[in-house]
Image (cartoon, rainbow, N blue to C red; front, side):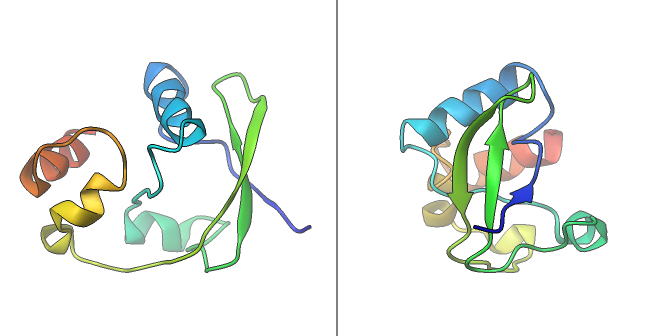
Length: 103
């Protein structure tokens, strides 16, 4: 099995641990990244079928994840239905946008 080695969600620390826990609990089934950052990253923009290892803040592997769908959208076009797949209890697309802009 070909795996991309990616560090994990967010930066190491409490946010990464919380997001990883949501994935392991099955509550987080989607994630978002800035296209301009992803396309310049050595790993590139993920493609459906790509697999990667999710690590905790210490670098310990937690799970193998598979990308099933990739959509490229403007931040303003992310709907609440999509934002809700992140499993982070956002109450609206606007609250999701604010959180991601703040990050």
